[in-house]
Image (cartoon, rainbow, N blue to C red):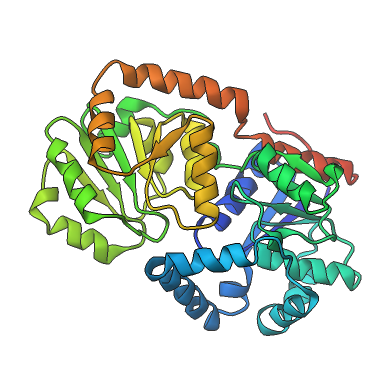
Length: 381
């Protein structure tokens, strides 16, 4: 029997879109042995391995150096879909071979986790492509560029996003609130003692500090301020792919303490969250959802104007975190995690998560859609 094939299309503008695609792919395969998945960062790497990285680099530089400009552009186009001319231009410049890719892979459905491939696949559907298109919005906001009438179903993270899509004319029947998918590693806790041993960590109050997928850090003043607690609080800094920033911290005497770990890119964030009492992070949709799945309280720094501001507002409103604004916030939370409150708060957040979020729900929803298309999809154990 032929396995059901799911093609997941993302882009390299930030790591969250692709992380969501891989999380959904792994979740589907874990739920059923009869699913075959393929994740592709389509225009920025697969079809354009030379030009694509240059475009991503320019985008990254704008985010890092001119976040207000990015926010202004985000808001100015907030209620607008990509017009047909823009879709045609994108197709000709970056996606001219997409039809060939689809013909070769023969997917039973396409899931887009970024608005650009979503717009291009939508154009192909207008030209006759018959494959169902499911669109997974990877933030707790719904920018107008996600919206096209050719999408068969939107998979969204919250009722807030659902309402925004409905306000833009999307029928309620074409929206399902599934939550943003996280990798199955975030579905359940790992063994604490094994993690401490694996990463050479101490069994003490611990703060996990993440610099974003690109290793973007915030105020050096606030970061250095945290090190004054190193005798009482263990600090784990994850710098992503920013090796230059990691080397800078490693050479700084303030960070040369046995209770401070400075890491580069790691695939073990789920384990590090399990042994941490507080997460300090930029409010990217994926990282925040992973933190919610683990029931870890979060402090958000420097939200990029636009979707990160909306993400922060969602998680703050729902009780999962607050903004990191000054040293007073650090003092308060670094005191709280050294008290019995830390364990109590984690149990409260896990209960809140269980009421609002099922980490496997998005994968289950796509699996159900494949079943409804016809043919047998066998569930795993």
